[in-house]
Length: 558
Image (cartoon, rainbow, N blue to C red; front, top):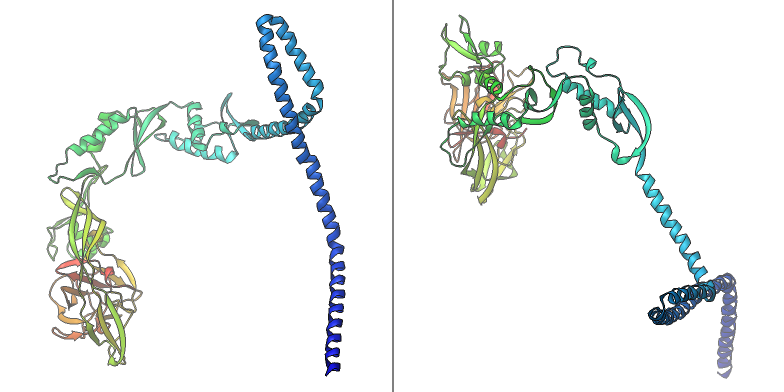
């Protein structure tokens, strides 16, 4: 047992000896690269201490001595000045000479330190000064310098702008109005460079043309004339607005056209420079006269509209007195009178608008395609809508929504749609409001809602005749066929909640539903045709909410 203890003790002693050897060896190996580094660090610390710390300390001690000497010298100078001024002056220079001798090393060090700093400040100031200069082209027109530019492209742009103004009212070649300039390379301040707009004004001033400062009148970007006094021009347009009367309190008056008053240089001739009376007389005459057409035998709405680059809808809006037929000899307005300016009245209206509840769709393989089961009834919301209404001659010209506040949020309707195969269902991507696109294979919109009073969407495609029309949503058919009006063969479906959809100009004999029949979203109801007042095969699709025509794109998407 003792032998075992001695063996263990001996083993421990050997481990300790070997560990110490390893640690000494490791220390030697690590110290080899660290020793030079430590030596250099020590040298660096000593250098900093000698050249900086001690220098600062000596400088502070020297400053303290100089401060005491200055205080002593000041006291003596004050005392001497009271007794003899000339003696105080001689004593002052004596103190200065003595200071230079006593503190020669300190003053020399201070000078050697300040001089590089001063040179750096001077160098930076010099760089900053010369950075404000640049090489530029000096443009000489004749013997006159008209400006400094960065490159020749600035001149070319300025020349085009100048010729555009100089050519107003000029019948000849406008390029002859300006001479070719001369260029010289010059070193100038950056602030002396000018842009093309300023250079164009200088070119106009330097030209031989009779040019004067005036106010140019531009209507929708088109130059009309120039007047020497802008206030005179504004008074003419204001006088036109004063003739417009309205009973609406918050109404503002203006023009449909954009009127711009542009100050600048303009040719001073009778063709372009007008006075206020001539401007008023011009604005009181039409820009173009109205055009009329007298109906001839064989004429129809579509023929007359096509011959005059109009749609049937536009033609009927221009001639509201017309019925469903055109009699020979009837005079129709085909081109309205165009004025230079058209006064408008703008006001705001606020009304409540019903927000159709969204539809949350899930699919059920136990129901046939096109079948729809309501799981939860939805509830429509209400928004408070603010619109800007523009009227011309008392007739609404445009409406633009400018604000909308939610009064009550809609509650979504939950429905299930069938996915089992059926025989007459075409499906389609359903919108958030539960409607599908009414023509699965035709997606081109040839006439949008609201344009010239158009009440729906006109949808077509290449060789549109015969393409399938489907119900946009489930509902009950109210009309299937012709009712003797301009819609031709049509289908009207009532979807409930005050919403109806109309499908007009269907192909004769293609309607496959009947009044009173319930149809599902995506179910075939007919084919695209061109019956009724139609210029070609297309579907006229309407969405009617509580008797009011609304934009179908708010309900369907392609």
